[in-house]
Image 1 (tube, chains in turn orange, blue):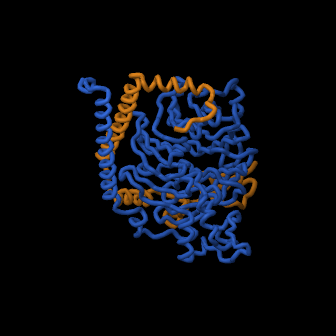
Image 2: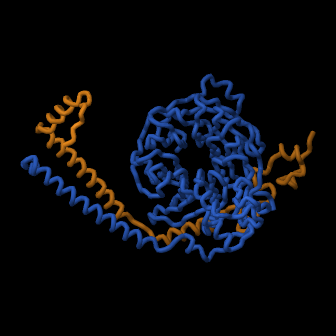
Image 3: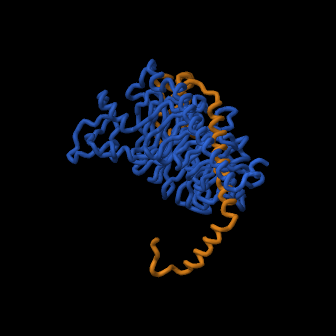
Length: 118
Length: 416
């Protein structure tokens, strides 16, 4: 066995402690406890895996079709080639009186609703 | 008990045997799950959408509406009001600002107790806002409908929610009485705002929780969280229990978002790939990878993504908006893929139909994906620094981006 020429500080007492621990009847008890914990954890994992196994699943094709169906059946004005353009006045974000006053030529103007400024 | 009657040594052997048996069972279960999943995964979204016509080159109608200027540091987070009439932004200059996206004017300002904010949230009734960040606390403020109202409040802070032991990376209101937080201490938590204390804790992640999204579809009680352990997990809010887990990648999961109908999620991770998972099929349906999209568009020779003039430096110049239609400044060299590979996804959202997916990359700004075809169909441009967030308005008619260049931009469809 390799032995350090200059023992570390408290090395003796450390060894003593370890020896005490190894000789003590507690050691195997603690080991048993650790093993039990390990077993418990694996069993928990197994139960969870069993749960995932019994879960109801639909086929990926059906899931894909339902996504496609959603994109085809919900209105989306960011895609005018599918859903057409908003009519002037329909986009609340573009009905900006403030902007229109500042810059009457900017798009988004409410063409028919001409306002009079007093 | 039987076990107790064994001697210590025998007992050890007994337990070890049981452990080995349990491990064997685990292995069998895993292989069975793999089999079931392989059977379920009969197609991908890309294959099932073959019948659908691809979008044309200028399909996306989103024009700049407003540039929101006023913060003087990086913007950490933005949220739309639930009525789509205002935008809340949190910046590292120590303020929450509320904006009118139509006029571009500020409606309200909340000075924060800490400038190290990472996330903010807007309550459904518009009366409360929340900020959370590196102080480990989530602070709730009451706001009036105008700045004048706010002079009446001596104290804006409604409550400071303490309990996380690490920075809070994301927060959002469930309703006017409950808020959810995700934290670097590997947990998510829900808080009761009436009582001011923690209601439930969500433990299962093995890394910092970096992002979170609440399913807003009708009647849903789910939310999803993504963490640095590479997993996205679906939680049941009522039972405070784990519903489902998806392994995303070996890198951090930096953004998660529910698809509009609440049956699927998309995840963005540091490896730069966006993945679409379906909750009912319990598997991955599609994958969106920036370098691959660029390569494929080169093959198809779409001028949209193909730069045609070679750069003298042989480098792909990524800062000069390489994806714009009018400007192609560089050639694709080998360094392109490595440069794009390293670009993580920071934020994700959908257009109202879900056909378009907005995605922010750390180095490439905000790209617009066609969800069904896995093609890039546009880009939200204009920021001079990293685009940190993209979020679509609840009414689906506008998109807002926030950037480290201290500004925000709001885009909306133009007429004709």
